[in-house]
Amino acid sequence: MEQQWNSINNEKDIEYVSILFGYFYDACIKEVKYISGSYVGDDSRMKPIDDIRQVYMIIQKQNKEHSVIEFLFDGVERFNLVPANEEYDSIISGLLLKIIGKQIYFANSPDLKIDELDKNSNWLTWIKAKSLKWREINKYIGDSLVYVYRD
Image (cartoon, rainbow, N blue to C red):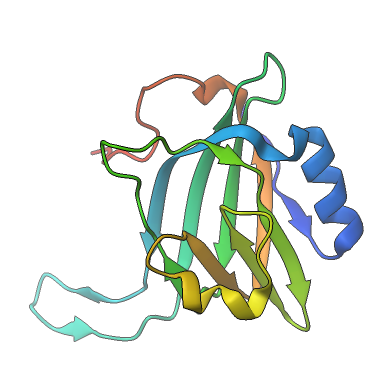
């Protein structure tokens, strides 16, 4: 049975999920999936409007319990993905999760200010979206892919 989605609506919700997952210390982004809403149909007609704009993200953490979380960012306005290359590790030492106005911000570095995100886009993974949900999915610990094509 799949876990239910939990909404992030305020700082209290952010604090709850942060405490539950140990402030995401010693964690890593395992997988990311983006759905735009645009597509080309079987008849070759295009629907070129990004009306979905969702990012699904799985983060794994070194912990026996509360080890895997899936985020669902909805209404994504910016998605900046910067993978670590083979010369560096991709260990997260905490996340920036912040609600400002009607936007939620996520970054894989906890010590930045929101106005610094764009300036650091060459090394920083970050997202700006209209909403964020999360669910705990510990069954996905390990290297097996979650976001795979299923016929």
